[in-house]
View 1 (cartoon, rainbow, N blue to C red):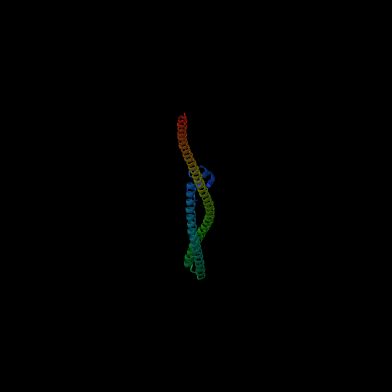
View 2: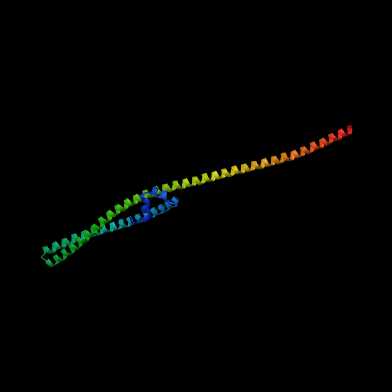
Length: 204
């Protein structure tokens, strides 16, 4: 199949196995889809060209057959009138037209065979293309889902980190408040202690 490159020949042997070994399966599958699309277009174009050639060959065969019949009638007429030279010329022309007819029919048969092969190739290519496109869609969806899930996990991780940092700041503020409160209470206790000492000294 001239439409296929070595790349497609290898991939078509086993798409899944080839994709498993590929460094970038999605890129390889995209290339395969492009190659298959090109192959479908090329094969359809070749088939259309052969169908036009088939029609031309069939017309040539019909025309040659009509002319062969006419020359045969002329040869018979010449013989009936005893004109051997004209009969020989007519027979020679009839034989040439017979050769043209046979050649055109053989060409038509070859083209019919080619067209049948090309139609099967197109069917096979389109099936492979549909399969590859489906695989590509599934792969893209899977990759997008993985990216989305990865992003969600990353956002969740960052959210946990922010909550933890906020909690740490709250704890630090609370500890700072307790520390400040403790210092204030210690100072008040000392003041009250001094007052009690003065009161005690006054009584003595």
